[in-house]
Image 1 (cartoon, rainbow, N blue to C red):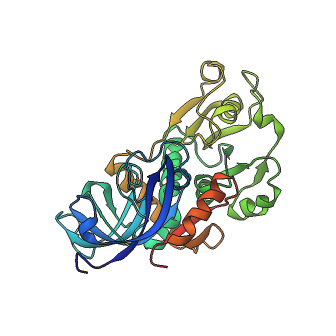
Image 2: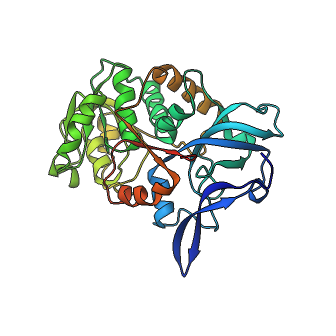
Image 3: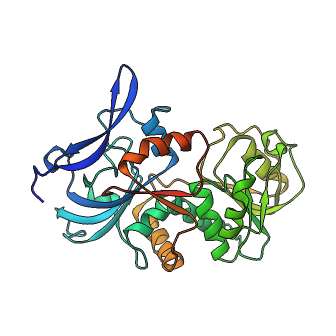
Length: 334
């Protein structure tokens, strides 16, 4: 591919204080600095991507911006010995799609230290079906394991279970032998069969999850993966078994935590934060290799929908309205 050959990219600009999203032709010569150029096969649509595309919050601060916090593809040009031309690579996090141009382009140039090799058992599509959501879910599982939470210890709760991280976490935990409970918002009964198909042993919902709990509630959960925060996380902590652990990775319901220290000092509950954006490379590789072993034979038909670049703005608006289920893989060449 020549440096002036055109390719498609979704580009965000800001006009009169409002974010605009358009499909444009770019060339390699227009790409930002980096030592590896990647022919992108797939990206994905995450909640943070939806915020960027719809102009919600301040995810993107510099314009123009190519969003997309994930990408998977093949190295076209390389100045890094670890990633020769033809290598299959994955990129998630590192503020790509926020501060640096991201995956919603058919070609992208990035820093080699942001990349990891495509894990055995995965191809580009499966890697993006998992994406940041799957990496985050696996990091959460690894934290629960480090806290001594094993299959058979009791039920592990996943909050925000129908979303991207939640869906993968439910499926991942079930595949690893845990008994999983999936928490969803009241009124979303339509997603219950989907979550059961992913491996949830029970689906939990109720108005109490929107209320601040007592300092200690009845013990229900051996472990938990929380993607919601706020009152939901507070109730999860108040309902943990003695010695239980919570891996917290999201704040879809808010960044506050209106609770007490009682679960920590009277039940020995552990709260572990999980970050996939700046996660060190060695731990990323370990997580991706484990995901490859778990998901290598998975067709992903029940959890993934595929869309082209032109569909991203509409899907992003739907996600922000709370209408999503599972994972969206973005085929940048569609």
